[in-house]
Image (cartoon, rainbow, N blue to C red):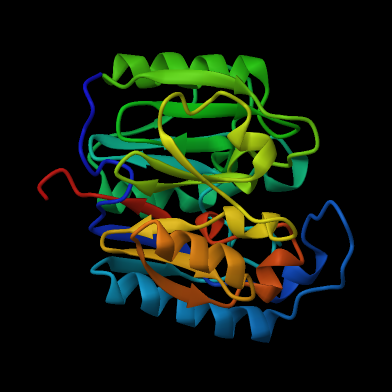
Length: 268
């Protein structure tokens, strides 16, 4: 795969889903209190507006009370200009989310396929760069699923590499993001991993590891509120930023990337 300039951040569309009240019972590694559905929806509205302001057409799907984590739409699917891939998140409570989002994918893509085999891949473990797609192994993404996903991506003409996510990192993208133009934002442990080759890495300052999960959307980088050192580091690297509250999402291990499926239409 030759590098496709802007593949990782030039988008025309996004799919999101309103947080449900049942998000209060959502998955989390550490209990820091239950998120409020109302407060989360208020933050989500700001998130959707930021995507729209960045130039995206945003589909906002209705809340799903039967799936507490369903607002994290990035996990059950992966989108490329050529089509969408339904993933299989590796936790039982989220198994039905792929079927629930299928209609939204069919409405936007001519080609939608399911992850082959019986392995698991969670979208939070996939980092798309302009020249390679990195797939991190985790508690939610196993080797069988990652290998099947990598093979499918190669059939579609994309380079894919499976990575051993460092111990203690929940998802691959919990600890890193692309800022675009060959620049990576990463926690210190991920910066030292060797995954990013010769790319420039902006290291997240001590105490702000949560802020490693940002998203570049066209001309701006969306950054979580409350992490001034990371914000300053991103801006010092030459990127324009927009700050958004993610206080409710963080209570259930969510971040900015989890809340949308971002993609460029093939016609764009």
